[in-house]
Length: 164
Image (cartoon, rainbow, N blue to C red; front, side, top):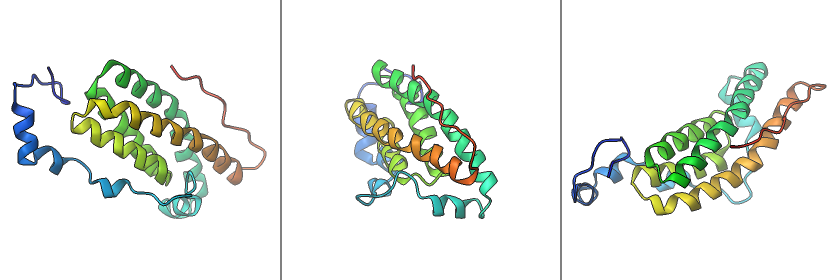
């Protein structure tokens, strides 16, 4: 068996590491993944503040995130289906960063939970967390398209991307 970093794992080693708290110390705190009920898919004002009010730059970032989501989700689906903790961790981490970059707190929280489960080696939790993340991304995609339209009327984006 291999650990999340692709190195061979010695029998009993992970359980001792977990008992000593190594995995928990490295993992993000569950409180970091909390969101308020009814929170929007993304916080437009916060996203704009995060780029110093530069609407053009925010549109560029949103476009990059929007373009990356299908590939990241496809990679995540394949990793979860194949039980590949390392690939699940990598994709979840990238989705966490992507959601953070556009102030999509609900998607970020869902990605962070999945990332934490993968980091701890909890393969049984991955399908549930992946489903929750996919639901949040499904809400985020139209919000990103709307964000782009709100800054540049007359442009149409949000083309449907086929996953996997």
